[in-house]
Amino acid sequence: MSTNNNQIAATMMAFLAGTVIGASAVLLLAPTSGRELRGKLADLSEDPADKVKRLAREAKFRLSPKSKCPDYKYDGGDAWI
Image 1 (spheres, rainbow, N blue to C red):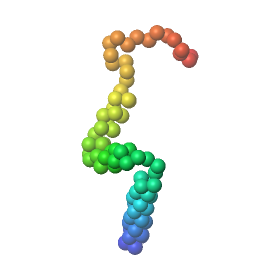
Image 2 (cartoon, rainbow, N blue to C red; image 1 turned 90 degrees about the vertical axis):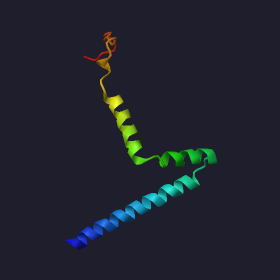
Image 3 (cartoon, rainbow, N blue to C red; image 1 turned 60 degrees about the vertical axis):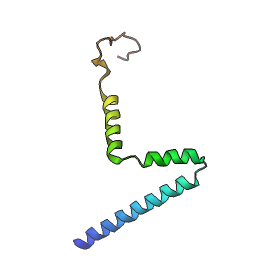
Image 4 (cartoon, rainbow, N blue to C red; image 1 turned 180 degrees about the horizontal axis):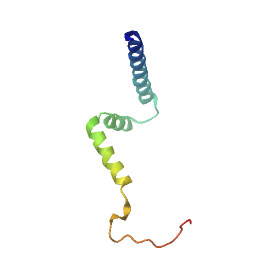
C-alpha cells in the first residue's frame, strides 16, 4: 500500500513541478512590456490567505440577493412565464 502512496505523491509532485515550469515559461515568453510583467508578478505574489479572503468577499457579494435593499421594486418587464 505504501508503494501506491509513493507513486501518487511522485505523480502529484511531477504535476506541480510541470505547472510551475509552464507558468514561468508563459510569463517569460509572453509579448508584454516589463511594466505589465511586473504587475502580473506582483499579483502572483499576493499573500494566498489575503487572496482567498478577497475572493470570498467577491463571491459573497455576487451571490447575495439584490432584493435586500428597500428601494428594489419589480417593474414586471422582460419576464418569461
